Image 1 (cartoon, helix red, strand yellow):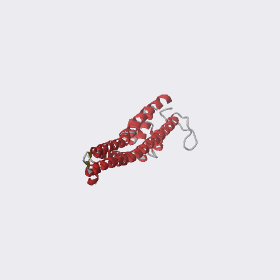
Image 2 (cartoon, rainbow, N blue to C red):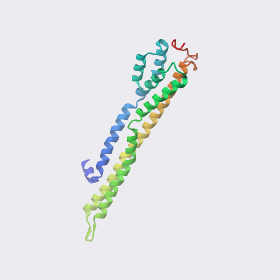
Image 3 (cartoon, one colour):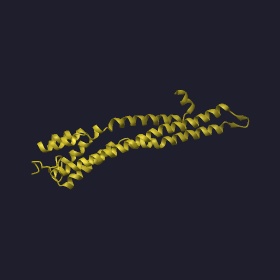
Image 4 (cartoon, rainbow, N blue to C red):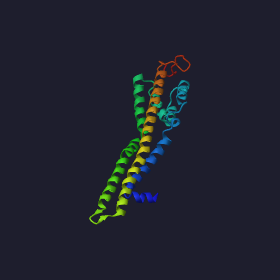
Length: 215
């Protein structure tokens, strides 16, 4: 490893820093963007049952908002359950924007690293080519300088691609996951609005009754 770094020359150090940052971001996003943590499968049913049994209270809303990003969106809607459909949906959309911003955290940085890593490798290639041309002299070519220049050029190009390819793959993967989470949250929030306003059939095919507080 150290021999490779020595052969690649000083331009490789920014690439190494970029690779460490990219790996850290990938691990962090893998840990955070889990479906059971973002959109728990049984949360919507629990929210509907709690709403029917006890209505809406501050303690229930606080607990729901702390549960997950989906809980934050549903809690925003329930805080406005006495308001019109438009107001309730507007509150859900505002919460959804905040959740989307949090889910997309660090993705811009990861995408930037995936974009600039090949350019950093190209910079190392240019440095290596400069060393190759610098090895030319009226008395002949210095084989050691020539070999070092070739190593700098090739190693930096390769390392730039090694950093960029996985970073771009995970960037695209995480963006797709975030978009799917947002779509699922939007669907469940719309169901909640319809259930509260009594305009959607319930799970068993009957019309959902209103909460006692809404009557």
